[in-house]
Length: 135
Image (tube, rainbow, N blue to C red; front, side, top):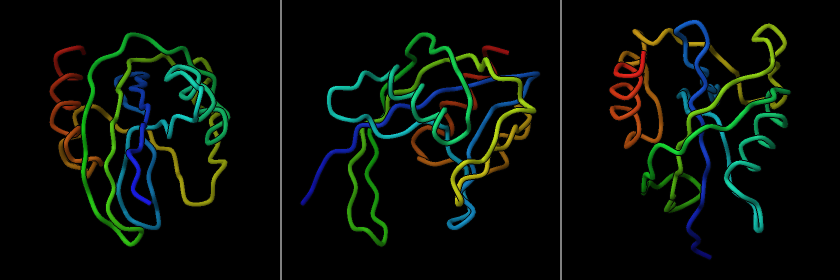
Protein backbone atom coordinates (compact mmCIF):
# COMPACT_ATOMS: atom_id res chain seq x y z
CA UNK A 1 0.00 0.00 0.00
CA UNK A 2 1.36 3.40 -0.93
CA UNK A 3 1.04 6.20 1.61
CA UNK A 4 2.17 9.76 2.00
CA UNK A 5 4.18 10.02 5.20
CA UNK A 6 3.66 13.18 7.27
CA UNK A 7 6.73 14.02 9.33
CA UNK A 8 7.40 16.78 11.86
CA UNK A 9 11.01 17.89 12.41
CA UNK A 10 12.54 20.45 14.76
CA UNK A 11 15.74 22.52 14.77
CA UNK A 12 17.24 22.56 18.26
CA UNK A 13 20.30 24.77 18.85
CA UNK A 14 22.48 24.88 21.97
CA UNK A 15 25.80 26.75 22.20
CA UNK A 16 26.09 27.10 18.39
CA UNK A 17 25.48 23.40 17.85
CA UNK A 18 22.55 21.70 16.12
CA UNK A 19 20.99 18.63 17.68
CA UNK A 20 20.85 15.85 15.08
CA UNK A 21 20.08 12.16 15.14
CA UNK A 22 22.48 9.72 13.53
CA UNK A 23 21.34 6.43 12.02
CA UNK A 24 24.22 4.04 12.65
CA UNK A 25 22.76 1.31 10.43
CA UNK A 26 22.53 3.54 7.34
CA UNK A 27 25.26 6.13 8.08
CA UNK A 28 23.41 9.45 7.84
CA UNK A 29 22.20 12.30 10.05
CA UNK A 30 18.69 13.69 10.16
CA UNK A 31 16.78 16.43 11.90
CA UNK A 32 14.94 14.93 14.88
CA UNK A 33 11.22 14.38 14.84
CA UNK A 34 9.01 11.68 13.46
CA UNK A 35 5.81 10.52 11.84
CA UNK A 36 2.65 12.36 12.81
CA UNK A 37 0.05 9.90 14.10
CA UNK A 38 -3.62 10.16 13.18
CA UNK A 39 -5.31 12.91 15.22
CA UNK A 40 -1.98 14.29 16.45
CA UNK A 41 -0.74 17.85 15.86
CA UNK A 42 2.77 18.56 14.59
CA UNK A 43 3.66 20.06 17.97
CA UNK A 44 2.36 17.06 19.92
CA UNK A 45 4.24 14.73 17.56
CA UNK A 46 7.53 16.56 18.11
CA UNK A 47 7.18 16.53 21.88
CA UNK A 48 6.29 12.82 21.88
CA UNK A 49 9.08 11.79 19.49
CA UNK A 50 11.83 13.67 21.33
CA UNK A 51 10.68 12.19 24.64
CA UNK A 52 10.48 8.65 23.20
CA UNK A 53 13.80 8.76 21.36
CA UNK A 54 15.90 10.97 23.65
CA UNK A 55 14.09 11.56 26.94
CA UNK A 56 14.15 15.25 26.01
CA UNK A 57 11.54 17.89 26.74
CA UNK A 58 11.22 20.59 24.11
CA UNK A 59 9.26 23.73 23.38
CA UNK A 60 8.10 23.92 19.78
CA UNK A 61 8.54 27.34 18.21
CA UNK A 62 7.45 28.82 14.92
CA UNK A 63 6.98 26.72 11.78
CA UNK A 64 9.66 27.37 9.18
CA UNK A 65 8.86 25.52 5.97
CA UNK A 66 7.29 22.47 4.30
CA UNK A 67 9.47 20.09 2.29
CA UNK A 68 8.31 17.38 -0.08
CA UNK A 69 10.60 14.38 -0.48
CA UNK A 70 10.55 11.30 -2.71
CA UNK A 71 12.97 8.39 -2.33
CA UNK A 72 13.21 4.64 -2.59
CA UNK A 73 14.88 2.20 -0.23
CA UNK A 74 14.62 -1.48 0.68
CA UNK A 75 11.06 -0.83 1.95
CA UNK A 76 10.02 0.52 -1.46
CA UNK A 77 9.04 4.00 -2.66
CA UNK A 78 8.37 6.80 -0.17
CA UNK A 79 6.59 10.13 -0.46
CA UNK A 80 7.11 12.41 2.54
CA UNK A 81 5.72 15.76 3.57
CA UNK A 82 8.11 17.23 6.16
CA UNK A 83 7.14 20.21 8.35
CA UNK A 84 10.15 21.94 9.89
CA UNK A 85 9.92 23.97 13.10
CA UNK A 86 12.18 25.99 15.33
CA UNK A 87 12.39 24.71 18.87
CA UNK A 88 14.06 24.97 22.24
CA UNK A 89 15.46 22.06 24.16
CA UNK A 90 14.49 22.22 27.84
CA UNK A 91 16.41 19.15 29.00
CA UNK A 92 20.08 19.81 29.84
CA UNK A 93 22.19 18.32 27.00
CA UNK A 94 24.05 16.06 29.41
CA UNK A 95 20.73 14.37 30.33
CA UNK A 96 19.75 13.51 26.77
CA UNK A 97 19.85 9.78 26.12
CA UNK A 98 19.79 7.47 23.12
CA UNK A 99 16.65 5.43 23.83
CA UNK A 100 16.45 3.58 20.50
CA UNK A 101 19.17 1.18 19.44
CA UNK A 102 19.84 2.51 15.94
CA UNK A 103 19.47 6.23 16.75
CA UNK A 104 22.37 8.15 18.26
CA UNK A 105 22.08 11.83 19.15
CA UNK A 106 24.84 14.27 18.31
CA UNK A 107 25.44 18.00 18.81
CA UNK A 108 27.10 19.18 15.59
CA UNK A 109 28.78 22.61 15.43
CA UNK A 110 26.93 24.86 12.99
CA UNK A 111 30.08 25.47 10.94
CA UNK A 112 30.47 21.71 10.33
CA UNK A 113 26.94 21.10 8.97
CA UNK A 114 27.95 21.56 5.33
CA UNK A 115 30.45 18.69 5.68
CA UNK A 116 28.03 15.97 6.83
CA UNK A 117 25.21 14.11 5.10
CA UNK A 118 21.81 15.22 6.41
CA UNK A 119 18.67 13.56 5.05
CA UNK A 120 16.32 14.29 3.49
CA UNK A 121 18.65 15.96 1.02
CA UNK A 122 15.99 18.52 0.06
CA UNK A 123 16.37 20.02 3.54
CA UNK A 124 20.16 20.11 3.94
CA UNK A 125 21.07 23.24 1.95
CA UNK A 126 18.05 25.14 3.26
CA UNK A 127 18.85 24.27 6.90
CA UNK A 128 22.54 25.20 6.57
CA UNK A 129 21.60 28.56 5.01
CA UNK A 130 18.76 29.21 7.45
CA UNK A 131 20.94 28.57 10.50
CA UNK A 132 23.79 30.66 9.07
CA UNK A 133 21.40 33.62 8.76
CA UNK A 134 19.93 33.06 12.26
CA UNK A 135 23.19 32.66 14.23
